[in-house]
Amino acid sequence: MNTILIKNGKIVNENKVFEADIYIKNGKIELIADNIDKIADKVIIAEGKFIIPGIIDDQVHFREPGQEYKADIASESLAALYGGVTSFMDMPNNNPPILTQEVLENKFDIAKNKSIINYSFYMGTSNDNLDEIMRTDIENVCGVKIFMGSSTGNLLVDDEKTLENIFSKSPALIATHCEDETTIVNNNKYYFENFGDDISTEYHPKIRSEKACYLSSSFAVNLAQKHNTRLHVLHLTTAKEMSLFRNDIPLEQKRITAEVCVHHLYFDESYYAALGNKIKCNPAIKSKNDKDMLWKALLENKLDVIATDHAPHTIEEKNLRYKEAPSGLPLVQHSLNLMLEFYQKDMISMEKIVEKMCHNPAIAFKIKDRGYIREGYWADIAILDPNKTWKITQDNILYKCKWSPLEGHSFKGKIETVLVNGKISLEKGVFTNIKAGKRLSFRS
Image (cartoon, rainbow, N blue to C red):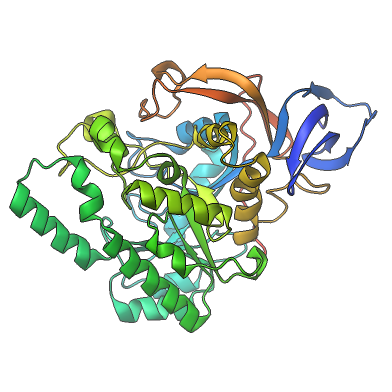
């Protein structure tokens, strides 16, 4: 199908909701207009449906290579597709960790054969791989990831001289996980010594505290300001950190941008009693006041991007004691549904959801020809029924780990059809077996 015509839908794009038709040819949007009457190989009637750009998730952990028993690029990109996500950027904490250009390109080769949707991967950083970082191709790699807090293996960068070098010399956008390691180590020691090895997950936001977050994120912001670094701070969680970010200039002019994840907008510490390790993540889900202040900052444009930090583990791992259970939760299939619930509650508009999940990731990362419904852009498009109700059950969870902290929850609004590069990969809720994903490219 070289040509597709989408008719009569409500397009949500660039802060407007309007009815129009979309004509797609050879993978790209050729025409957006009222009542297009061109002949097409395929016609999709979208009456009563929202048509949005495909979601761009700038932070996921699809676990391949090295931990395919938890997840892999094929399984998680399929789950993402069902959630309306058409592009993802995956983190470097793999086995082996992504610390050389050769290992990075090997990962791209895997995705070329397996990813259903569009993809890019971060180059990892350590205390001793600056030469490899400097070789990063900024037109073909989304960015450089720094774990400025607890991580695994050699991916924790805690040497101040190394950080100065990376921030002053990196050719690419730097994305940071910000938690102060010394604070966390001290908090761990205090709580386990005073309350024993069997402490509840409810202590998690006390161990991975506001102080740990703010010390690290403020340090990163100060470094970026000092060196005029292009910095993107990932998964912010505290009210205090919101003072670090600006909303007085357009996103295109920002050198420092900020991200919030859907679970930090949805959950707060009151959920630990019921969900325990299922919502254990780093940085931790914190207080209701923190959540409320994240919402305020999001709507005021201090927080620029909504993502997931999708991080699946097996349910057996999550059922371990708090001390042993890994951090992270699977979210990429359901992130839009969480935001649609907020839309249904009049907490956020559809236009703002599209801005934060589609437009702004494209702007912040300078992604070429994606993130918008525009003539000349790749036809990455999701069509959703805002009135269809459904429930998350184990049968419709597509993550390889086969669980979700949202299991049993009912939502209003469901993705029906998804186009990736102008190919229909999901049609009326059914995967078409078309793997249309391409490597993302970026403006320098």
